[in-house]
Image (cartoon, rainbow, N blue to C red; front, side, top):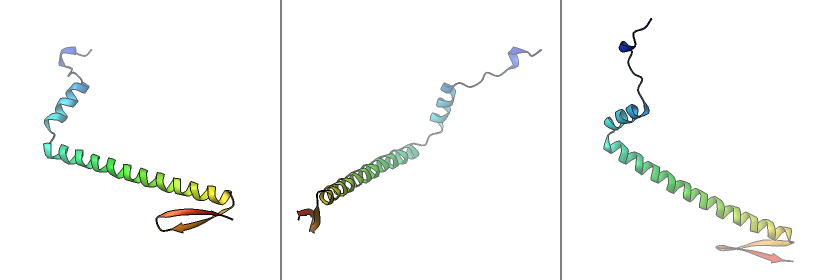
Length: 82
């Protein structure tokens, strides 16, 4: 038989949380927060650029499908129908 008085209780989630809070360096938290913000900004920029290129590609495909020819005019793409 085992003596229940000598068994150590298992740590709970609350115990783990308090242990991690005690050993967290404020500078590490700040760096982690800034790196997460930077990652979000980079993902937003990549998403915007991908959407823009997708839209541009869709417009070229519609132009070609309607029998037109794509003419690049500086910052714009023109579709000349024959």
